[in-house]
Length: 395
Image (cartoon, rainbow, N blue to C red; front, side, top):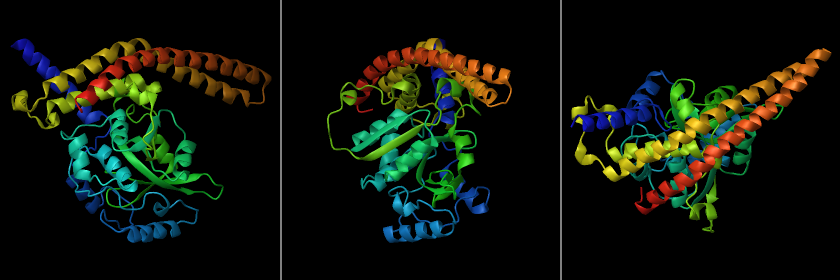
């Protein structure tokens, strides 16, 4: 009995950690957030917006936003419009992944409403792993991909293609999903700010975020306030890129149930497993006052056990390959950056030292990518089996 209590306590503690800290968690309920917006504690764009506004109203709001800036802009009218999620009802605590999903669905004309999306993806108020978002979009007929360590130009190209961009950022202490629908430019053509919708800043109207602030929030969004999660889930400048409705063509990657992104396979395996574990528990464990409040009747034991197994089988890869690989890559990049600065100085010795440092940094960084690649390869194979189970049981 004591052993059972220990295991249950561990599972609840683990689930609570991820529910409080991992991607797709908003720090407060939507009602509390609305109250803070109304009192001015949180500022959003002053342009009025409504989730049920018509397309013509969205275009008017977008034109007004564009004309208020002297820089040329990709207004909301040229990408998503100002309507946000489909049927948004302000329900759900940790709903930013579903807010983004419903916003993208609405853009592509998929009829599923936000409450249905929330029920299907996040019934327990959990976080939403990147793979879960991508797989759910594919299931609903959207051609989509994502990758780690992207650039501002990657976002620009995505928007210029006429499609929204979804990113994971730091929302003042926690990982958070946002949907970027446009950008403003400086006179020299560089990006001045991004226009976005989300369940934290841009709940009921478009939010404009300066590019410098965005870059800080986009870079390693989990590391600043949650170092342990920043290591366990080494997401950095993550970008989800929907490309429109799928043509239904055959994909060998999807047929084999391989992870959506090889370079983050270890991270995705951990995130997916934790996601499934929390969903398997069937309740918002962050609201439990004590272990006695845990309702065993709500637990989907197979799902919770499979989720825990997915996490546990990823940990050896993370410890042996993921963490050392990331450390080598980051260290090599730091050496290269230092060498680049030195090589730009006037002194001959500075230039020599800088050139040598860039060479060493390149080798170290490459070694790190090889080490990480080994771990990701193992996770790709292992997690393909778990992904197959999720498909079989419709998890």
